[in-house]
Amino acid sequence: MSAADTASPLPASAVLDEHDATFRRVVWRIVPCVTLIWFLAWIDRVNVGFAKLTMMSDLQWSDAIYGAGAGIFFIGYFLFEVPSNMLLQKIGARKTIMRITIGWGIICVAMAWVQTPGQFYFLRFLMGAFEAGLQPGVILYLTYWLPAHRRGKALGVFVSASAISLVVGSPLAAYIMELSQGAFGMKGWQWLFIVEGIPSVLMGIAAFFILTDLPAKANWLSEREKQHIAAEMADEDRKLGPREHSFFASLRSGRIWVLIAVFFCIIAGNATLVYYGPSLVKEVGFTDIKTLGWIMGGIYACGWGGMVLNGWLSDRRQEARMHTAVAAAIGAVGLLLAAYFVGEKNAAGVIASLALSSAGTMGAIPIFWQLPGQYLSGSAIAIGLAVINSVANLSGYFSPQLLGYLKTNTGRYTQGLTGIALVELLGTLLILGFIGKQGAKPS
Image 1 (cartoon, rainbow, N blue to C red):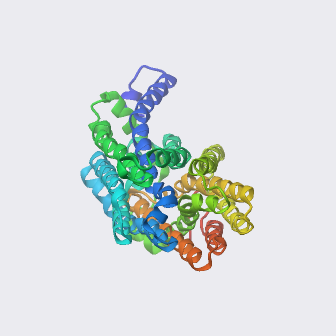
Image 2 (cartoon, one colour):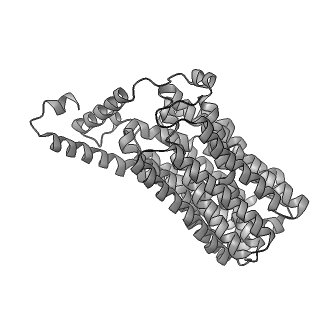
Image 3 (cartoon, rainbow, N blue to C red):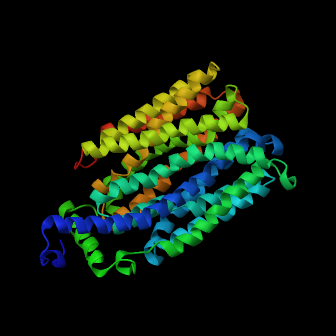
């Protein structure tokens, strides 16, 4: 407790109630804003998966061109993520988040006018460059405001926005494309980019006025409320004890590399679901865009359910390692089953398999982010979160390209899905082999 708390005549339970009220105020101020931004980021990142359904034929592009364009997003993501997190530490979160959100919103709108593969690649690269730093930046930002025992639920709400965006965004994209087709002489996929890009620009402007960089600068908090936050953050730092503060030391010890490899494998499965899920469902006979949108919404709802259920189980058991490993294994099994059923043209099997994979793969992601804090602190965690996310997300570059290349050359999705499933399963094996139980260190 702070000096003000220890000197207070209030009983301990009343002081705790005061702290709870302070942190509820913080959560309601910050978490809805960053969650909505992450929701819009995913809407704009993956709407290309639905645009593909008609854009490909309109522009006469192959699956290989689409796969390269979908994946090159992650090259920009990789190159600019660490600089973005470093910039956040210098100029603050609200300016950084505003820059990120407005930038990708403008790029999303510009996607409506692509005509050549080169333009497609360039804009997808820029979208990745602008969005880089958002997720690790928000994770880092939350560590300034909330101690770990109060941060888990907030982080879970924030990360789950990606799954919610897919649940809502899939039927929304289908309806936008259907209803706007031909309006003002433009295609439905063009209107999809415009309609979904504009809210991001507006939300980026709003973030500048809603967010505050640090508790000490929050004019919406009283001095006593600021003391509550400072006291709990200091108490957490004492309880955690010594952790690695040097990012470069963590590189030498191999801690970062194990975490990168694990997340790389998980993201390979997630990128496949996001960028090729609609195409796989279309492959087994669902050609009506609105029907397909509702099916994908249901599949991604299973992903959201996996996040919520796995997060609840992990918090209840206070364990992250096995909850991440098992969820990734379930995701891999779902992709293997999808590879089999898509070859058999079994629509029910493909839908059920993708739902299973979505629940497992997406359920692993928020729990994974509990692992780095077991080993890193200080500048190591600030830079480490960005490095883990940026390098691991390169799998989002390779997996769509692999799937697109094999589909173009074999006419089937089976081989690509099988390969990516094995990659995700490798993530489970890496966790079991190299990540220790709570408090242990990876070798």
